[in-house]
Length: 233
Length: 279
Image (cartoon, rainbow over all chains, first blue to last red; front, top):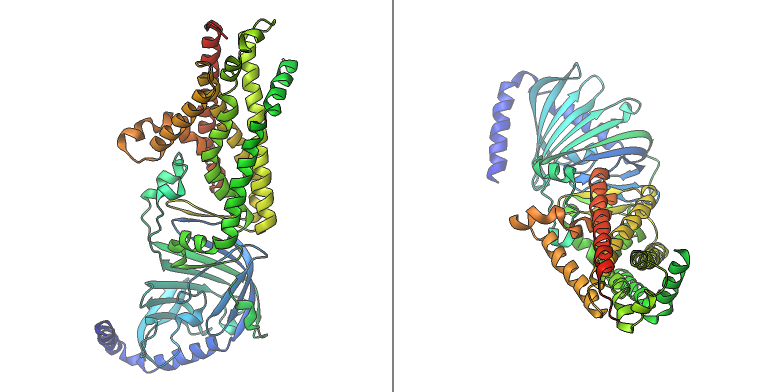
């Protein structure tokens, strides 16, 4: 609760600093949110690369199924699917608060040569998201970057690049930067083959940030997806 | 040399106890497969709890490739005993039966005899590993199906795509043959010093157990000698399930095992050549 009050005070001060454009910020956020919420489901062929210090995973190709608000499944033709857990989902929808929010204009920034507006969004409910910062490309009305602070799972930064599906605010490429928890298993259990030069290097890496890069090759949007697709295997 | 080897193989495979090893391999494999069929999900849940905190892994995790890996991990600790059962008997068994002196009255050199005994044990080892591959890999794939394979190391989570696994097993089984051949050479070496087969079998297991403990304990004293112990390199087959495959380290391990094999065999030949054969 104290964190929430601090966030309000911080945003209030920020709001005063950018009073001239603050009145537009809630409307801008509403337009963006409505555009994102207009996608109820999609099926997309994807290529995914997980870069986490303790994970050695090749590029995964498959079909990603999404159904609002939070169902997601990667199907890999008999192979294993690895997705981040629920609250750190791959969709913009999950990182933009859905209920009542306080929106503050936090100025402008430049991403890839384009000027973008920064919005700070604080949900008024006690949900998983504490604060979301959104970099909005006003011309195309899409989020180019989001920085979401969650209650339990650290901060998630999402960089989005658009091309063919910009009208649905669906990105062609997404890079998710997330906090990574430590991974360790007892050596007595795994009985590692220790004579690995690269294994020695891994121990020195203390990087607690990870990235997931997803390339969406095509989308089928709002065609309707059965809930049975998402049933856990 | 070929007729001698044929006789040696006839002697090995005529003995019922030779087939006990194949039965034990089958039994252990079936027990692990049965355990995984009944309670594999909780095992996987426990093993993956570190990863499951942040990632949702779905699909046939408990597939034939992973089960085979688990079987190899546990069986390659027991297989040295099965190899020693035959190789430890190679020279000591002949001495115990009183046939060694009789054999050496034939026009064959002692070096030839030791080498044929080694070749016989090698063929037996190869067949044991081939049998292991059949019951572990083939049966596991039939029972659990295929899929991507996860390899959990103490500090890494490795995912191997299903079309990138079979060749790794091929090389892993080849490496296992090399590792078990070293055990066979050790057993023959110990077998040359005694007239009773039980001694070399127990001694081989004793040496393997003690050195394996030293290879796995993280103590500064042991860390100094670990690279020189053959038991440290016997698990080199696991390297094929890493990404990228540490070929340099695996080749180094293979080299150490080959040197030990040649060393044991050379010393055996030297000693046996001068040994006073009394039975």
